[in-house]
Amino acid sequence: MNRNFPTITPGLLYHDAPEMIKWLCEVFGFEQKTVIPGQNGGILHAHLTFANGGVMLSSVENYEYAHWCRSPLQTGISTVEIIVFVEDIEKHYHHVQQKGANIIMFLEEKMYGGKGYSVKDPEGYIWAFGSYDPWQS
Image 1 (cartoon, one colour):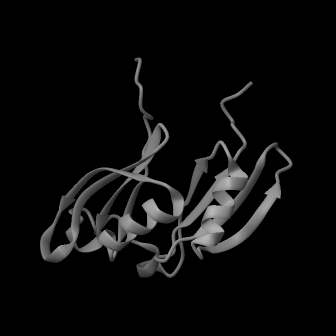
Image 2: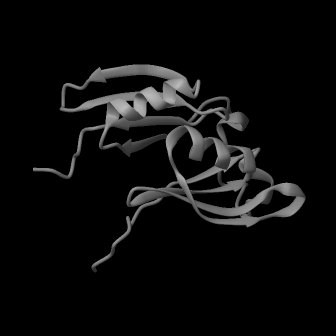
């Protein structure tokens, strides 16, 4: 199978999905690929891209399978860490700092190579950004 997109994409549930779409684009550098409005100002489905990857997200209230999944605001803790490879980690880190994001692990060298840092987004998901490329030999 020859694809030009990832075969795995995380799906996230947000309580204020329209605001989080703006935040993810402004702070992390995602781009809107698809945004389908849902009921009461929510989001039925959105696909945000970052380089050749991305995430999909929905409003909690509009998610058809909400009985299977919960958001960090519902559970009180993030049960997933979204890991993102970034070419220029220092530039990305400084941009995220300037935007006032909640950095929970400051930029540091990693024992397995590269550098990385982690952020908790406004609704509680944990995002780890790093320059380590596990696909390189």
